[in-house]
Length: 127
Length: 336
Image (tube, rainbow over all chains, first blue to last red; front, side):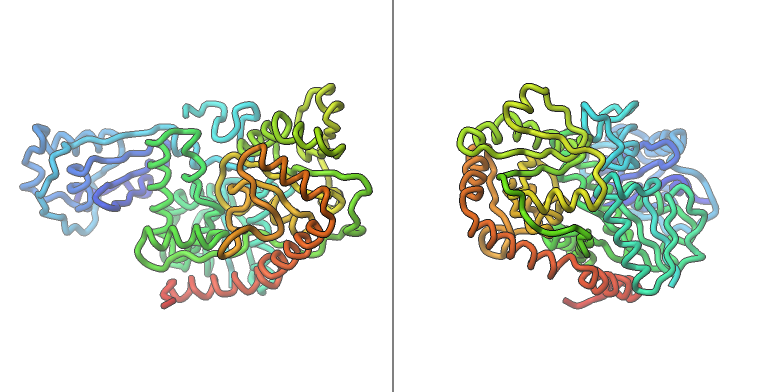
């Protein structure tokens, strides 16, 4: 068993050292700090030494636990070759989240709109 | 070949340009001899029964990433436009960047990405550092099925656009409050607004503005064809605009902003079949000038129709999508 993005509910991508993840079940979008992205880019699996370390004063294990609690990560049977990179840029283990972005994402941007407000303002969308 | 085309929900080609574009692609693929199933992305159980998957727009494209069989068959991301480029003024920088990264995920995840303009495709290829995106006409401009291309006896201009689309709202506000009063100071022309617009009665009467809603396709063709000019002072937006391409196809020159003419620029200077004017005063001046110059209108009409015929004919779309299907099956490994 290895730590991995929850499948099939979460899709992720890492570009230019920044990892994003989208929980397709609840529409939440996550954008991770560079330090967090170093760890997440190595999924599936997290190197044991890395897991036991701290980054910016925060335990990597505690950060991973937080992502598991959010439903982004899970333990499952999958081959792993985790990255052992430990070069951190120093921005800490953190993420930015938008809970309404996937709502906008799934809208038809042409006609699912509130007429006075225009796109992408719709009922329930907090933009 | 069995092809699955997927979007967020049922297509409403009579109501919006985006649905119409997807509908045109489906018809084009069918005309190439393929069997096409259209399914909202939430109703796709598996892609393994298909030979090719086409995801329309970024939302459905992201959701499709988790479908069983994704990545096992060739796939195409039909982006319509760079959505993040038209979100900036609405949702702020952070969310725009988030949306850009989601679109970036689509470009990276799909074998072929398709956008209407070469500029959009080039942006994707430059961003990725490899050739993954191509441009293809987003609309089909076939037989107008109109009675004639005769222009009305009296000078008239038309604006076409859904009242629920924010750039159109801004355009009509500019038109009614700034551009059209300046035109009317010089020329007793009529302005026809196509869509569910609400203009106060006294203002509409004083500026000779009429509203035309719920037109059939033939009625719209006739109305645009009869107009002397089409106006598109869009204050923002991204991608090729169907209203502009359609007006050119109808032989009606367009006066519009740089957003209206995206993808319709000439290689060096100017735009095909119209005049670009980015502020109300210059737009009004261009309209007045063109309304008074039948020879220039006729020249731009011919130019616009020829350009549309070369890019947006059913044959042009078939040729391009034949190549896109081939590219998808080759894994988009092309050298130039």
